[in-house]
Structure formats: C-alpha cells, structure tokens
Length: 225
Image (spheres, rainbow, N blue to C red):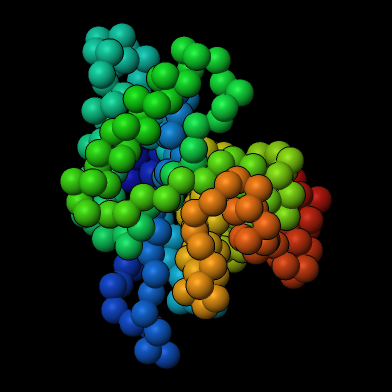
C-alpha cells in the first residue's frame, strides 16, 4: 500500500485485467462525485459478480491560488485526472452522481461545467457513462435515501471489506456511486432489468446492497468512531 498525492489519492493492491482464480471476468467501474466548489471524489471498484474491492480512490482538490489564476483550472485538473485514471485502470463504465436539483442556479451551473469535462473524458476514451441521483446511491448502498456522510462511509467500508474508513467523504461518495452502478449492472445482466427509468423506479429496481452482515459491520464501525 502506498500513497501518492494528487489532491488526495490512494491506490490499493495490484491491478489486473485478467480473470480471477475462478475464471470469472472482472467488472471495473470508475465512480465520480463531481463538485462545484470542493474536492471532486473518484474511486475505482472491481467486482467478480460476488465480491467488490476498491482498487483506487481519492479526492482532487485544486488550490485556491490556482483557481484564482485561471477560471478553467478546476475543469482542466478534473479532466486531466480522469483521463489518467481511465488510461491506467481501463474501467468498463463510469458512474457519476447527478446534479442535485435543489442547488441554486449558480452552483448548479458550476457543477454542470465539471460534469461536462467528466463526460468529455469518458467520451474521448470510449467509456459509457451512467448517472445516479444522490438519493438513489444512498438507498442502494445504505438501505435508505437519507443516510448521512458518516453512515455512507461506514457502509462503503463494510461493503468493500476495507480495513480503514475511506477518506475524505468525497472519495467515499465516489466509491458509493460505483457500487450503485455495479448493483444496477448485475440486475441488468441477471434479470434483464432496465438501467434507465425514473428515479423512483431505479430505486425500487436497484434495491439495496446493504445486507445484514454489512449493516452489522457498519454499525460496529460507527460505534467505534
């Protein structure tokens, strides 16, 4: 395990694009939690159809001085980082948290700009993009759409069997949206359930990854904090 700073960036384990020891193909998703002002979270999750593991996660923070020097600094840094992540980890899909409708107009526009470069990076590398509303992600990962950041971090840690709680919370959110898409893809492959549809329909179809064992582990994590 080692650390390399690009904002906040962490890699876990050795990456392989080959089938696992049981001959199962691995499905890899790059999750992105775009931010209008704060750090943009990212996380790469790999699944063999039964278990998921985090390969890499972090949050990109662009210094205020850099942002003042150039109005497009954040967009440039986000695009550059995502291009590097796609080239390094070769994800089969990108999962992005959608714009929160309750945001004010100015914040929504800034967030839309960041999402634009996220989509551009994916398009340039031929990676399909899927969007999920924050409430969908929370319902899928934590079991209900009102989970707070600490609950989400604990559930992500439990579902990915991580030794430590993923930090910062932006990175945990990115891992969560990747897990949400893995759940949607699994249901689509097994039962032919559509990935598209209204937010309410998606939540019902996705169900929750938060089984009893994961809930107990997450509760233990929260109790020890």
